[in-house]
Length: 151
Image 1 (spheres, rainbow, N blue to C red):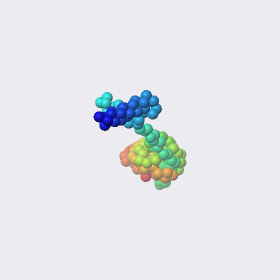
Image 2: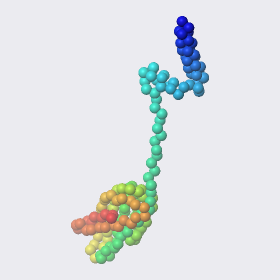
Image 3: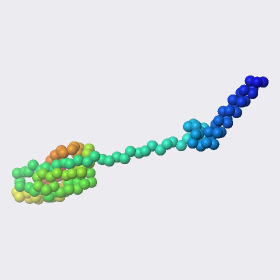
Image 4: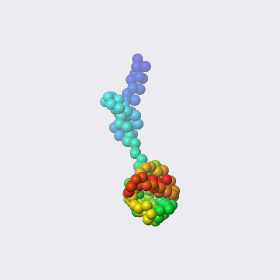
């Protein structure tokens, strides 16, 4: 009989300790939310995981044209990863370009003293590396038509 009283007394002490801790609020045991969710039949709410923000790294690149034997000028527009610019002369520096694989597009005209003019178009992908130089390469494909690329 005295063993039953000791067991009952121990259970009462445990239950009363849990009730006091629950009433105290801030002192509730860490596992209370899990037990509460278990008896409610649902899993505990996961803590939100912060999403890291991605800021692309930017760099300066150079666009160069080595010239040709036909006395050509290239009033072209180059768009790299959504940023357009108009190279001036045979060497231009462009800042604030995203690093890595970037799509580009070249449009405009090429005017040559000896072989005439052509509309130019070209597109592709370049691997943007800090302070790298990319060369404009072009060729005439038909009457008044040319293609261009960056290498």
